[in-house]
Image 1 (cartoon, helix red, strand yellow):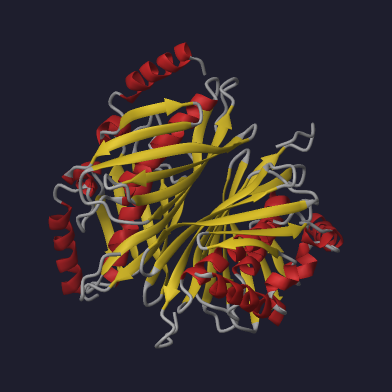
Image 2 (tube, each protein chain N blue to C red):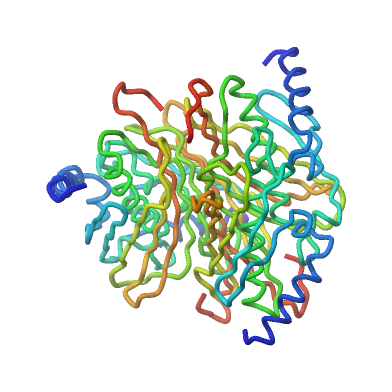
Length: 144
Length: 144
Length: 144
Length: 144
């Protein structure tokens, strides 16, 4: 991905995110390279679960989103969908900003494997996850 | 859990959910028993990901929430937290209502294992997940 | 799969297993149907880990093998390989016979999702797992 | 862990492994440090599955063993057991030597999280996994 493609990709991302769960949850793209992406989220009361800590579903959303951006960028001519997401929740988040880092682990013709980590603003690791993405040829369209 | 405890638990849940991610995402408790819970969600545009299908993070939130309610009810005197969540995404959801079913698989003194499934309104299985919850003694409070 | 195909499949399995890890570990096929398979294993000292309980790798081998047989039978004209295996270890096994049950959860054109459970001879659940298999077209052969 | 404790730990490991699945599978401890361990395995025909590639159960055994050694060393006064093991199988192994690397990701009072990778002798990544270990106090002994 050269600079022009990257700029186009970021603009596409901003447009595509309008009205989606990405925008709804409030994640921001902090940095992006071919095999690594960083998101941030300001943790707010509506991100919490019933016992007052960051909802595991928010962490899952952040990691899936970060990995998904990376997977989409790796295969710009195809559709990629998450097929597996494995989360380890390590320490509780109560407030502040979280940083989400995702990177590509392995890529074959049809499957892409990712890993990602979520850090609290004191630098402590909060969650750790891995995922598999399935590459679906866009032409001809096929139901998977 | 007898009827009175159940009614109290549902009322507690409603109060506890105010302003949390559970309320933010719009899930509804459809039914509840000691070892099985059912939630529903009306899928809306803001639940979608960038390619126009239900965001994996929404599915993860729904399963984690359903399992978490069950885990909390199983140990009313302790705090339970999700430590592992494994999701399999099976078929895409584009609209309609999804139904989320969670049930207890195994329970030991400190760890509870759950499984759950998400169905589309045509009855097709959309996602499938398993999770481990860690039981933390509430007294004395300890950081985990 | 009709009766003749089933008989052929079982004979193929017995031949194919000679000298493999399946034979090395000592698993036996107890029953087999289109969407469900049962294996058994007599637990012996060489199946144990360093603290004297059944090695998690043996449980993983049994579940992967049971699910793999089912996946292979579901796509007799293709090659299927495990891409993800998620294990929950629930209670320790020290001796006796374990029973391994696997069943198909979902099948799409290229991906098959399975679940399986391992029971001790007192009926208690010992392990629980899920897996994804990738269907690779046998013709033309392609490196994955 | 100082040098003497390390030497004792390795000697303990060798003695403890006699007759276990570790010895049965043929893994060798290549190196060991407080937060990282490396094993090797010479791949042989009896490690294969029915389609002639390294059995996923062998990879799971290797990762669980490597992580387990690390977890045991991290808590020399307690018993640690695997509660979750998540495997991603990335590329097939047909022969040669595999190298297994495991490292500690996070440690709390009762739960330890690990990750590990298996490499082929051409350096390609073959499998990738994560696991959770539960720390059980040895005194007083309690059934989990």
